[in-house]
Amino acid sequence: MKIFTIDTGLFKLDGGAMFGVVPKSMWQKLNAPDENNMCSWAARCLLLQDGPNLILIDTGLGDKQSPKFFDRYYLHGDDTLVKSLAKHGFKRSDITDVFLTHLHFDHCGGAIIHDGESLVPAFENAVYWSNRKHWNWAIYANEREKASFLEENIIPIRNSGKLQFIEVQDGVFFTDTMKIRFVYGHTDAMMLPQITYKGKTILYVSDLIPSVAHIPLPYVAAYDMFPMQTLKEKQFFLQEAYENDYILFFEHDPVNECGTLQKTDKGFRIKETFKLSDLG
Image (tube, rainbow, N blue to C red; front, side, top):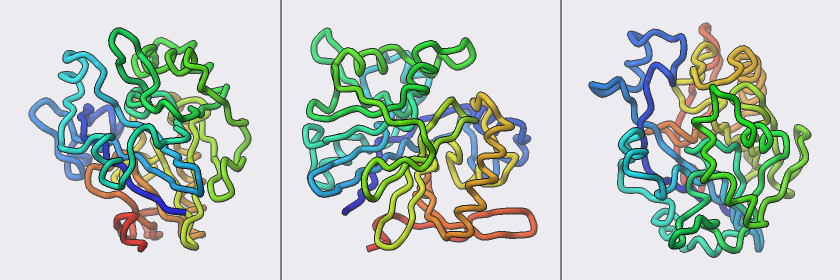
């Protein structure tokens, strides 16, 4: 099996929203905001080449939205999903499976593209994977969260006939080398891929721990639907990752791609950071 980091660009979100109850005097040292209080974040995806299967985990924001949308989220940087795939010798039609950790726009926006006036799957030969519990949560979104569940990102997946559901059972295997962990604090039934690679365990922490700056327990985004649940889940997974020397893969950290943990008198903190390519 081979693994490739797929960078799809940077975007901006309000720093206060991303750090929740943590005061700006503290979080601004970790991710400096601009004059509008906006911080840059990565939209970093993962590609697994496992035998004949080419599995893309999340898709970034995509590029089909209106100029008004991108003015709000300040998409920037030189990376795109297509360019990053090409860097590793792949194109969208090569993808066999699109695994969506959850259906917020910054994770599934690139799953759908414009074809003339129609919205169609960006990966024409791929099966799209979600789970029924989260899918229903997104389709029947609550008022607080529905701005993150954009109909144009979700409904065309269902209409394409390419949608399949994963069983909602923690630790269920997606492939022989990838199992799924379920968490419920950020949004209902978000999926975290746990991958065995070169004798190591890589945990794709998605929005449970968006960046290195979010490792301390109180650093929970205001976007999380159930912050106390997130707190419990972070505590559980950080302990497990520390005890088993997991590699955490950070989807939104603008600088750090991967890292391992150490335990300090202040709790778990980053031990070292590196790129997946450093694993050889």
